[in-house]
Length: 197
Image (cartoon, rainbow, N blue to C red; front, side):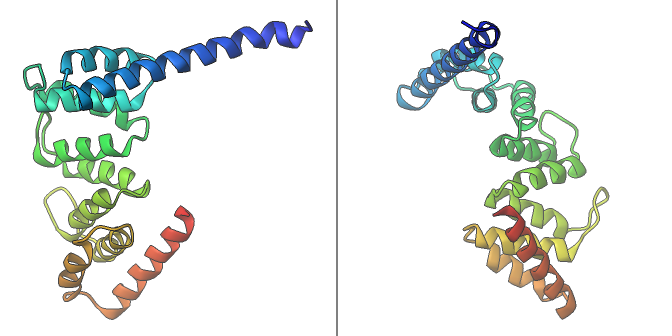
């Protein structure tokens, strides 16, 4: 066996065994969570999978604590698990984190951070996040500025991605916009879609 294989074979085998264990524990947790409603089993499996780097497992731990599934409802724990998954580009976790910042659950209300996390998920193609970030852009608040072009753009994209309410919301909002703003928003939406695909 040459030197290359002596060095890299053990690393490859370690990588395979780690990923297999990660997948096994996560799959076990999913089955317990969705098929049998055994939330204690799911929580333990998700904890193991999360410690092996599985961001979906961290997301489901957030759901368990937010929903109080076989544990006391603990929004701070939910926030912590969602944060961990969100930092790994998990779109659903980013939305949940944004929701918590938007409502002030477990943290001080922070519309700027809500907008940031909705935007991160929107850029990954989530119609729900696209719709919600559009709403934040549409409203002026003490923390955020309105941006009608961005609002129109994200509602348009959300509609393209299948959100059933995006067009109606966008068209009501568009009454207050100028034609040049709408044209710019459409161009930005088209450019975004080109880059996304």
